[in-house]
Length: 281
Image 1 (cartoon, rainbow, N blue to C red):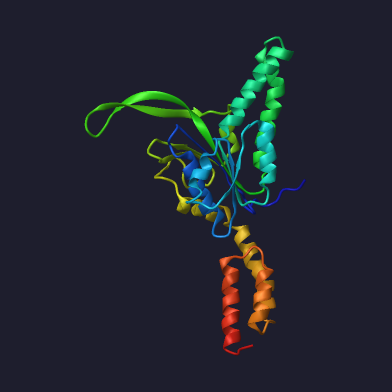
Image 2: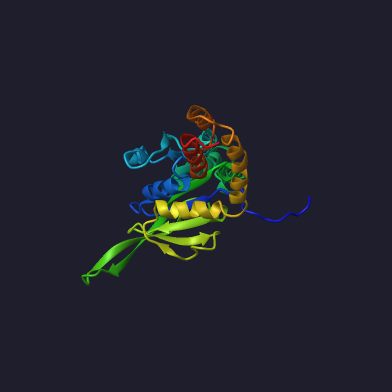
């Protein structure tokens, strides 16, 4: 197989958020996803947290699947069902790991005489199949994970010593962080420390309450380079077709056939409509 020049053509984000309870994992994921999806994008949400996502239905536009039994097989089925969505959120990926741990313990007892090490010969392929399903998804993916939690003390602004929860690592399979473009740790104040970053822009940066703007910035980085050039090329046949239309009714019918509709394409339609109304060819 021949080598070719590397580009970011059609790149899709794989982002993981982890933090202690109350750090804002679900809310932050929805804000970032909204920015990633843009005005016309669609967001799917796999909810393993007993319907918690729907509490944000009045603030965000998304479709949800409330997964009562979040086994690896069930999560994989829903990832497949989400194909066609621009962004998929899995909240949280920890539950699939906990289900797998229980399954491995059961396999160890029933097939391997209590030998958990041997039982992982069946558990590891399942974990890898989940990772592959995530990586193969044809849109952006944001996953959340619970954190292994410990306690420490700190002195607050009033000089009082108070306990503080610290999320030390994602509660998932060892090495899960290697599979994502970006890994962010959320604090109790809802700020995100970027632990891993393939964009080269945010490594070790603390982002205050990551939001829609941050998601849009990630989308811009992903769409940089060859994808932008391709979009510009794709506008040429549309512009040529518009030049042949001479009535607003013809414009309306043609407008209905364009998918996806972008701001650049809308501008072409607007310009042609103005020209028709002024009587220009």
